[in-house]
Length: 337
Image (cartoon, rainbow, N blue to C red; front, side, top):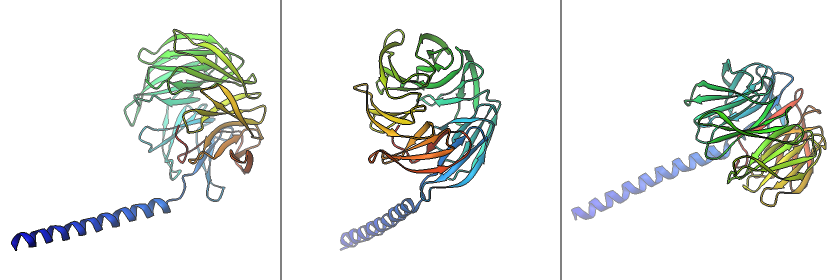
């Protein structure tokens, strides 16, 4: 009998614990369901501030003051902070990506036009667009320490770091070059000529190919970087002023904004072809893609608007007024990079 009662007691305890676990899980689920969508951030480069857009109401809820000329932004490895790089303000503004509250400002970061963390999370690298150098900072999870400043060609624009955290590539906007820098030694390994005004870069998951947007041309150049130096293998015609890339979320397709053509093109990285085009009025620049992959959020640089494009219907579904020269666009609720 004693054994029987002990078994009953254990069973009752199990039921109680299971019920408590069920209640906890239900509570967490309700919290997740009830949580508001993450805001969309739009960098107003000529106003030194950021528009915060509520994607539930599609209204601007606030403006965040930053340093001069905020152009690009990047999430910290722990996903606790969104870093806004203020190129002319020589500073970084850290913002909560969920609440849009400013956390802190880090000064003394010289000309951080474009920025990236290495995949191994050990390096924070910036392109100094107006001062012609790429900076390597050590990141300890909280603070940045400058390790080396690498002189480059004229006007380093955008960066791409390979999956092994071994090489960072940078376009030289005004000397029309693509440069490869070894991360371990912070030395330039090679440089090759590109088409006119190279801007953003995007690499394939296997690190073999790089796609380079030609803002002074009519498409995207494809480089094979698996050898000793980059080798041009193809030009994909997308539209005039090809500029910024964003992943479509499937590890195969990417979007590129054609700033002069007022379109966005979808590129198949395997076939190296443009497979779709979407209208994007007002000088489309940087963009993000909704978590379900259906909508593109893009800054219409000349129209002072955030434009939302439905990729299924292939049309603009709304435009929200923001500040002057909207550049970077980002939200936590995005597709897989």
